[in-house]
Length: 417
Image (cartoon, rainbow, N blue to C red):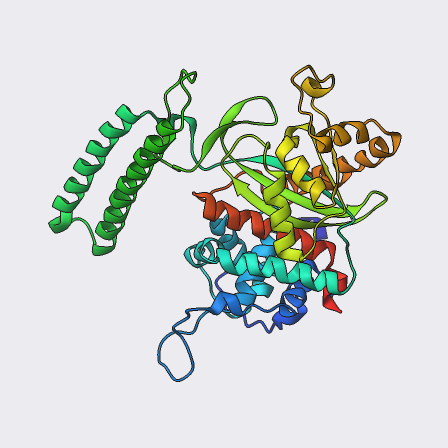
């Protein structure tokens, strides 16, 4: 009988047979994998601030607190790969080797991850300062040249969620009725205790957000000028978000994230030395607060500060020059030819004259390669182009995590020593 008439022997996958596998999690990643590097670097940092107020201490009963080193490394690695969602991280922990390696034999859900990111603002701020102190001690970077720039980050609020005062009052009535209806469903046999608790939490959260929006509109109306034609509005999703002009020329709800970056005009690593988040759409007046932030974190002020024309507030320029800082800020078009009522402050005159020199023009060219490059990396590679959290405090936590991730990746070799 020829082989052509014989039935082929095919190996089909069998999924009902039990299999025993032996695996050492520590060997699943190569030695220089980014997850390993970040784990090692985070291990050199003092994370005691993340354990303040923890109830699970020695000598007491109860569940242990999950490792802050593990949670922080998980977020840093996720941000480094462009992931900014706690739910996505939870999914990746079950499918991706790097995420599983970080977690080890522990289990973590998206609620725990979300809480860790937004409930440790002071600890993240302290960690950012400690990292800069360590880098300065090692002589890795200097403040000889610092560039500042702001980027508008899309908020979690949507444009239709912005309402005027009269509309918000109607929303208050709807929120009260919704809460009353939810309370009336307490004895509904078709709802479990968990489902009813979730509905109650959602109803109370909506009521809280409406009240916050009403309070915001009331405050905004007090500060409006007579020339303002449109009435004040606030979002029922995120009362602290504001509609801002974005980089593409459109107007959308956003936050203004200001960052200061130190580096060399010749290239090399960049270090974020200042982070501030505001809900003001303009960059005017942001130089002085950023200098205070840099000095608070590093104990020093920059020797030279670069910024674009949107930061050219005369008060900030004068204060910076009085502090001994060489201010290189582009002169706005409207100030290129000062009129009869121009600011005669000697510092402003000196700034305008300084920006006309060839030396200043040459050094100013380094601004884009410092701050704009870092902003682009945060947007495209670290997933900080929009935020899923609400409120200035929580958005600041997201910005700090992005800055910390960038600094650790830029200086991992120095910090591991």
